[in-house]
Image (tube, rainbow, N blue to C red; front, side, top):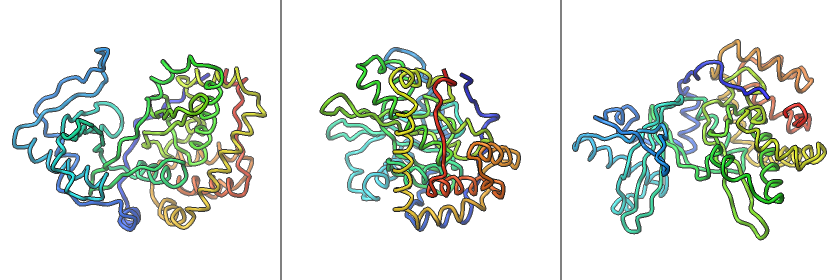
Amino acid sequence: MRGEIPSKKKIAFPISDGLQQYLDKYNRKIDIPLQYSDLLRHQESIPLLDLDGDDTLWRTVFYSAQDHTEISKYLKLIYAYLKTDGDVEVLEHLSIDRIDFCTFGNTQPFRIRIINRLNDNYDHFYIKKSDASRVYGLELENLVSPNRFNYFLNRETLIEEHIAGIPGDEFIKHNLNVNAFNQIRIAKEFIKFNERCFVRLLGDMRSYNYVVDVTPDIEGSQFRLRAIDFDQQSYEGRKSFYLPQYFKDNNPIIFLGINHMSPKTVEQYQFEERSLIARRVKTTRRKLRELFRIMVVDKLSSDAKIEQLKEELTAHHRTKAFLSCDSMGEIVRTNFILLLQKDFKQSIDFSKIA
């Protein structure tokens, strides 16, 4: 199976006035002096190693005493917005334990580890450079997926809550050797995740760009795949880029489906997930309509990528509905219209993938 990779490094797009107003209306904006650029003032850094002593590709950064005091104060305030709607009473027992910087990826995020001194419990959140593509990805995730989480725009800075789960690449490496019952559930969830990504055109779901949330159940466990990287929301021109099934590092889960599921069963799970997405779209219709009104006029990709995706989706869905689209926002909206009209078709052909 051919693995899809981005054609070039993702371009960051500015937050338009329309999107700014939308975020302000729905309380997704805060105003705190600390910005992403302030965290770049670190004086030194060391590699962050995992429990096995391997390099994580994150670096723990250190600041001067004065900068550390100021930065810590504002980071704790940001955490209060994420968790308690800005109630500063929680700040008294919080301390910033560590700040890590990711040297790869488009947004080059900072990950903040914060500790409650009363019980030594810790949590994380992220500080990133703002990007319209990512904001649309985050908002669509909250509107049409089964997942909810907090995020804020702070002028030129994006703040995101941590999404808990086992990183997909680690899960595939260590957690697939389970009983057949759980393997079927894992394959089923991948089919549903594949569907959720393709409907809303969220790309680049290689195994390290999602996590697996595992919930013990009466018999076996329940699994949910959750995207954690939203940079590639409707940016690339290749249709296959929006289908996690085409990334080779997801093959081990695909093989579970080959071993345990018939094409008819796969179609059933796809239909179930499309029906659930359609139900969520109907319940968030007013807010989604507002978002698309802005998204269709925002520039989120190049003209060449837009034309390529229009052509590939036209062939895939066997409809001319995409030919009149002039933006990535219009393409995503058309995908949802097809979903509501039950004209959205997509199937996983395991025989071709293998």
